[in-house]
Image (cartoon, rainbow, N blue to C red; front, side, top):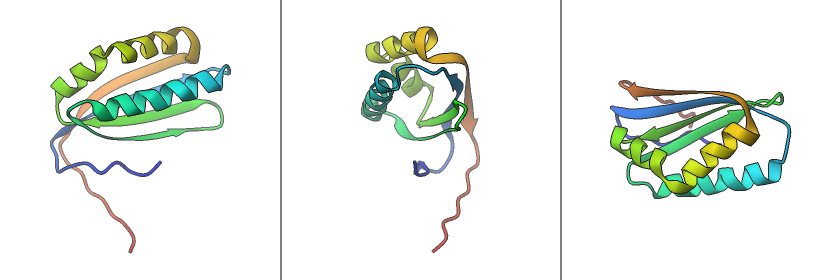
Amino acid sequence: MSAALTPPPPYVAVIFTNHKVVGDDTAYDITAARMLDLARSVDGFLGIESARDANGTGITVSYWRDHDAIAAWRAHPEHLDAQSAGRSEWYAWYELRVATVERAESHRRP
């Protein structure tokens, strides 16, 4: 996945670190793709970056215009269902952190 193209700060980052258990990857992948489509439809969604290692530990950082946009995403009915499935089926553990981005720099090699 490529880097999210975010506006100049400030904006908000939701950092979701997790460990996925071995299981039905098909249902997980379908749900993850659906959540990305839904997140993109929420006013205030700016982008996402995600990585997972071979052992199942992953980090997803989603970027949002403000806390109101995050609240709208958290309350989306399909997202609530996915959160429930994550706790009961897909994740051995997770940590969720919300941070305000105050400074951002980037570099792209020509």
